[in-house]
Length: 218
Image 1 (cartoon, rainbow, N blue to C red):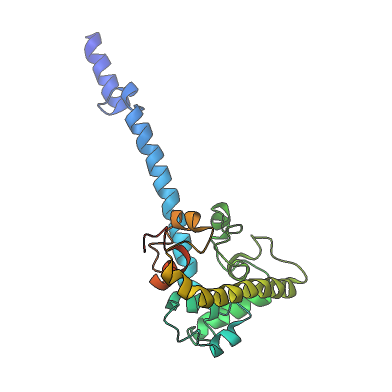
Image 2: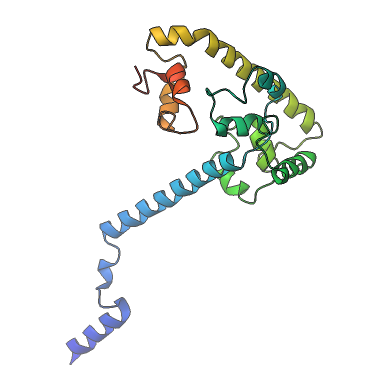
């Protein structure tokens, strides 16, 4: 009689599974893996969302870039043109342009997910430009100051100067890169780890130019 009551109690309390089996190493590993997958999924969705919605002129050099054929050049992808000179290249819709203007005039967070983005490194990741951070999460990334506009312009000018230098260097080293298969960028190892060689955001020409060796494009 005692054994029968014990079995009934075990079935009700643990749903036909002994209580000590509910926290086995296998179930613990499953929970850890599931947590990691959820984190990676959130990080990936954040990155894709930013690039999918980033439309505007994030560089102050767009006017000169347009004159030099940036908008029609096949060296750059449509995503890159939209992210850096979307307005100048006429790639932004009216609604997106209005939203960008509104978010630039007042220092707030344009996206409700900025807190989680910041936790995933959005505010400190050099993969995103200062203009993009200011556009979407200015408040969370502590980019709100009385001279936000001038500071952003100065920073963008520095970024655009670097970008212009990179563009000039790219044009000058195209022949060299074609003859010798090397990595012209010192950060290729970290870029490869972040998916540079497989990310469709970049063209094959850009991969060959900067990380031909690391991307096995020799």
